[in-house]
Length: 131
Image (tube, rainbow, N blue to C red; front, side, top):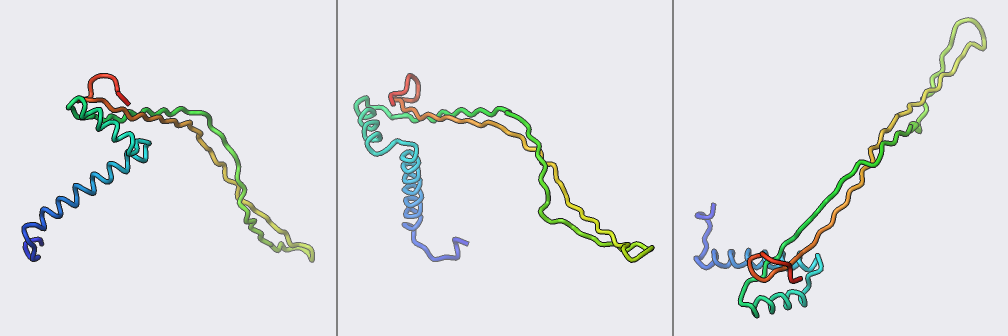
């Protein structure tokens, strides 16, 4: 429990600072991963400073899913089971039975698509994106 561990009052602020810095770093890395690098961020900050307003980012996504077809195929087991049986009634009375397992596989084919766009506006989000 936290009460049982010796700690100073500043440790709580260091922990909060670490958590906030980690969140900011993760956000910046996510923006860079979608193509909004340091140069773009400087330009957005300049636009916000010029108008004395915040810059709002909006991620818009769209996904589609459409059924294409059903296809059925048969898959034969590579292992063949062989069994020999003796029947009464003579010297050549052995018979061999070979069995294989054939499985019918039904596959449903779908077409999935997605597209995303990231927009930035100066202000609280109303109006056309500036980037």
